[in-house]
Image 1 (cartoon, rainbow, N blue to C red):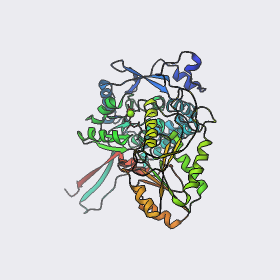
Image 2 (image 1 turned 180 degrees about the vertical axis):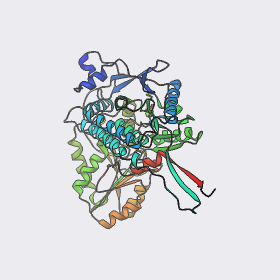
Image 3 (image 1 turned 60 degrees about the vertical axis):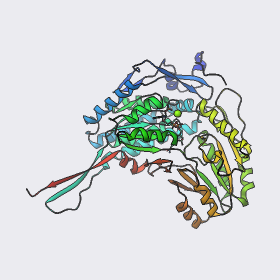
Image 4 (image 1 turned 30 degrees about the vertical axis):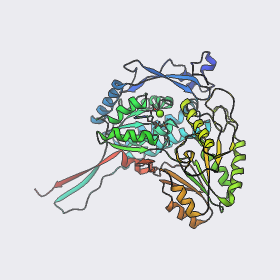
Length: 505
Ligand code: NAP
Ligand code: MG
């Protein structure tokens, strides 16, 4: 596979984009950092290339933030937090700005979806869903500024005791590369609703829609310095942000491996740290389930987002009695998949996000074969230079193989047999991760039992890989600390202050 090179002709430089806003975005010579309401060059002048994973060609040039730039972004956010230019606005005015951001996202929905598809390789229906999710998040959290209350505590008449729920201050948001627009809204919308200021560090491979969101935030009238965007690398920009004494919260979504490094970096300043990490979701199919539906959704459950979703059902546990039926069913579904250019409406699975991920996933497929798992079915992979991996089902997997234990983050599933409910619970829970679990059964009692017995933050019964903005989402065990969405994000981005007033003097 060749090293990515800048595309030469105008036509190929558009990468197949049809939206005028995307063509204009890609036509820029360079992208800058958003610091204190200004688009600034990085102090060092360093830049890096962002690549279209469907063609392995360069999409855009992005600023590589260094220590000075991150410090400047944090100083801008700190200044904006301390002078109250955002937190002291009337709650209804903060709400109006959040709704305006949602309006602009709605206006530019197709532009953002196409830009995200070109950057992360996910199909247009998937990226349209991510943009819609971002819109819904800004609207949902626009409802919150007017509803964040403290409490009055019962006490003797001479003592007035109440609590104030205040913003934390400066939030550092560090994002993963799978679904930048959704992941950024998941942190920015509630952080702003609570009155915080933010410094965002997008993943180095997928910063483009976050930069576009930055433009929309300014257009919506967000005051300068309230959201700052530093594109750059994790080990440099991300690390500086995590350990910075003027950052009050780090909200991180990414791998468990990096989550541990973040936890260590934030320990020095004891800042609040929210970690949304990896998963290896067990998807358990009982013989009493609607098998056709379970098979269809199990296939989607590990290939959706090209297999790059934290909560995807990558360990498929199947009762011995229906094993062959499920394997054949998933095989047929994989054969019907179209792997290819994610802008093509016929495509169901696009490329992986970037070269290193492509190599990693292929190495896991080789590892599975070497460990004695049977490669039962794979979809067809297209020719060409993109980072395409054929969705792959391994059978005869045991729960101790690497392909069953480690997060692959590609369209690869490990199918494992189980004997009875106790065995399914034991094997399903036998993982360092605890992000989610899915169960397929028509037995109501079993459904409720399994919901309690599975050791994971989200349980799906007869469905898989679905979130709701009003419902908390967070991982158990090594899948994370804290939770996001719904009212939980409001608690995560606020602090509770107690006030006592002696009234009899
Ligand atoms: P990643 O490699 O852990 O990176 C996540 C972010 O952390 C990136 O912005 C990365 O920057 C940055 N980073 C890397 N090293 C850092 C360091 N030492 N200090 C501070 N920041 C650092 O994860 P990814 O590959 O982008 O995303 C996939 C992972 O995210 C999977 O494990 C997936 O399960 C997880 N995920 C979890 C959830 C959830 O809600 N639980 C949702 C989505 C994804 P660079 O891009 O420059 O490396
Ligand atoms: Mg990385």
